[in-house]
Length: 217
View 1 (spheres, rainbow, N blue to C red):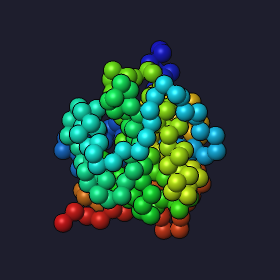
View 2 (cartoon, rainbow, N blue to C red; view 1 turned 45 degrees about the vertical axis):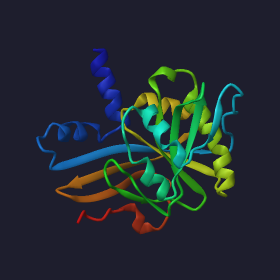
View 3 (cartoon, rainbow, N blue to C red; view 1 turned 90 degrees about the vertical axis):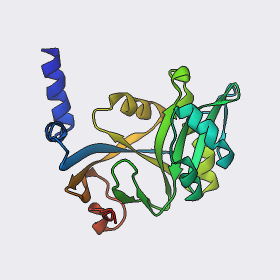
View 4 (cartoon, rainbow, N blue to C red; view 1 turned 180 degrees about the horizontal axis):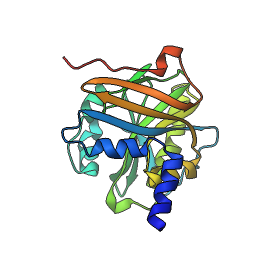
C-alpha cells in the first residue's frame, strides 16, 4: 500500500510522470518526453566554510575535473565556449564542481533542447560530487562560491533544472535556498524537439514557450 500511495502522490505532483514512464518502455525511443522543474536562487546564499577551498576553475583543471568525475567529458569545449566552473578543493583535489552558463540561449547537452537565459541570471548545470566526499556539504559550498561568480558577472540569481522524481536533488536545492518557479516538458518526436513550459512565471518573449533546438546535420 505504501508503494501505491507513493505512486499516487507522485502522479499528483507530476502529472506527466505516467506518460514518461510508458514512453521509456518503448524500444528504440521514437518518442521521448522528459519532465523537469526549474529552481531559482536569489538573495541569501549559503555562507562559505573556511574548511574548504572554493574557486573558479580554468583550463588547467581539465584533468583534475576528469579524475573527480571518473570519466572523460567535454570540459575543454565548455571552457572554450566561455562557460564557468566552480570547484571545491579538499586535500588538494577537486571534490565537487558545478558548471554555469551566461549564454543568451543555452542548449542542454543531454537532450538538445534550447532555452533562453535572461541577462540577470546564470544557469547552473552538471553538478557533481566525488563519491568519497558526498554527505559533507561539498555541493552546498560550490553554490556558496557561485555567489562571487554572480557578482563578477553582474547577475543576481541562479537557475537550475531538476528532473522529475529526483527527490534527492530537489530537496538539496530547497535546503540551500532554491525555490521551484516553473515546470517544463521536453518532447522529442522522431528528431523534432520542443520545450514547453507547463506552469510558473514565463521568462523571455512569448515565442520562447516553445524553444526548439536545430535538427542535427
